[in-house]
Length: 252
Image (tube, rainbow, N blue to C red):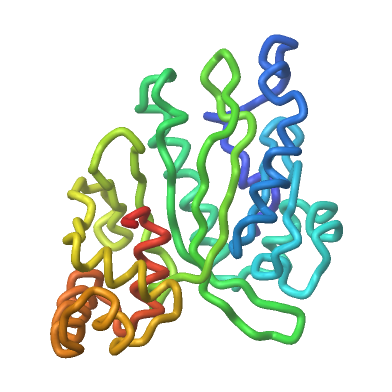
């Protein structure tokens, strides 16, 4: 039976953080809290030395009906309480895959990588929500171990759990993990045309098709055409999913 220790890979064992490494994190939570107040997404910070959460934002998506203080106190026990059982096994697998992947990355480049994946949270009354979980290193130890990481939570644009991928902020590559075939594969990130980006940006402001058409001096049929192509490219069925996908994948 899985337990909390299973989330902490021996590949990333952080026993003691040096005084020099600790200087990285002086007062950093003030910046995290300021960022949390500017976004609709939920976020929290994982500390791999303490094996718990350093910070949990008040944004409700990740809280599952708890307070931020309660979730912070629960730490990794939160996952055992609020993640669907089948997805909990998936999270443990992703945890192993992620650290194995990082071990193959040069130490000086590890902070450039972000891992994304989707899983179901279940709240106190049994309602399930598929969320997208994006985790990026904040601080590394001098030995190259991941000390603290920020996790950003938003609604998923997908229809099922999994969808594991790793991106590097310095290139246009995305590496996805094939759960059935049990291997990583590299592809190019989706590229949007300037018109598709324009339509998405106006859509994030809540404009209708007719209003977007008027704003960019084209016909509503032209907007419908570009939206249809956009949906096909992203593999989504509506504009809300398209906005979520583009936001999660940094396409805007």
